[in-house]
Each structure stands twice: as structure tokens, then as C-alpha cells.
Image 1 (tube, rainbow, N blue to C red):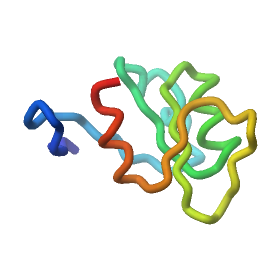
Image 2 (tube, rainbow, N blue to C red; image 1 turned 30 degrees about the horizontal axis):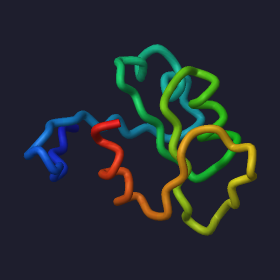
Image 3 (spheres, rainbow, N blue to C red; image 1 turned 180 degrees about the vertical axis):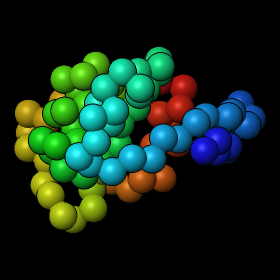
Amino acid sequence: MPIKPAASAGWREIEAVLLRRPNEPIHGRKCRRPPSWFVGDHPDLDVRGAHAAGLQAFWVRTGAFEAPDDLPGRRLERLSDLLNHLDD
């Protein structure tokens, strides 16, 4: 599903792949086209799994789970903060 978020340099087309866990391709080769990001709220199932698979992992605060201090990847207060990382 292509989406076009507003970015400081204009519009950039990115492709979002929406899958639910458990699903083998979620951390597997089908999501490995660089740069590949994984956004989730569960520290182990989402963030650590994505990080271990070599994906850029983002933990988003939803209130369902707290992020431990040693969690790899980046932290987002809200999903819309992901737009600030488009040029990373």
C-alpha cells in the first residue's frame, strides 16, 4: 500500500507492509528491502525481533507495554513521530 507522507524536501513515496503477528514474513526476507523499518509496541515480539532480523526497529508508546532501558532501536511517543525519521 503506497502512502505519501509530507517531508521537508517535498513528497516521498514509501510502501507500507501491514502484517499481524505471528507471521513468518514479518521479520523475514520479504520485509528486507533496504531501508526496512518495523514499528511496534511490544518490546520483545516487535522491537527485539525486528532488531535481531536486521530491521530498523521503532518502539511506539501505546500504553500497553513499557520499554525497558536496554531496548534496541528508537522510541516514538506517537506513531506520527515516525515522519521525523524519514531522512535517517
